[in-house]
Image (cartoon, rainbow, N blue to C red):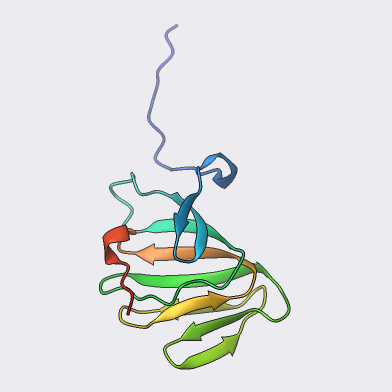
Length: 121
């Protein structure tokens, strides 16, 4: 009897095993960048201080707030909105944004994240 090996059709990410990289928001752990058939990336980002105001020309980011301090906020262009665990915001290209306060965020990025598409005023 021979064992057959097949490649699974799914992809699994353990964020505790993904190295964090510095970004304007804090430290990001990014998954699925190498999965050709997936059109985006998924990030878990730790924000320990106010992030730098920035925008993207091509990327759409969707932030889902996992954990955050009671006074956590997001700046979206000229608006500052309160956020709390369980809330979500979709940020289309061109919207200047930054996180304000300490938080842990799950971010879905479409198309795949590209650090060359981070712009600052």
